[in-house]
Length: 149
Image (cartoon, rainbow, N blue to C red):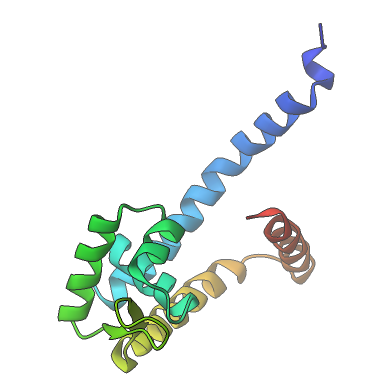
């Protein structure tokens, strides 16, 4: 039997528990920025818009898979974004039966405003850290990013 004090799984689970609250609060900070820029846009709609912007020319099935949504749910979200003038559906250059998705200029402007608000909100929080702690945090987040799928 493995001693729990030397069990790497238990250690990692404890680390994950300790990280959970800061990550939750950072996630709230991130989503609040989006709602302050455009309160009518849901978190799911924002995820779709960001997903389309990150994968130009993605089709509905690819977007749904990337965001772990069902195709009908992704389609309804795209319908709303298209009606709001934030997303375009276009015929594919490679397959005339396929529809690709793209953000409109208005959609890209919204994404940039949300991104700017997020940076501003995060900078306000980082202001309370010493320069040394900021560098440590950045290195830790970069290391974490390298492990993420």
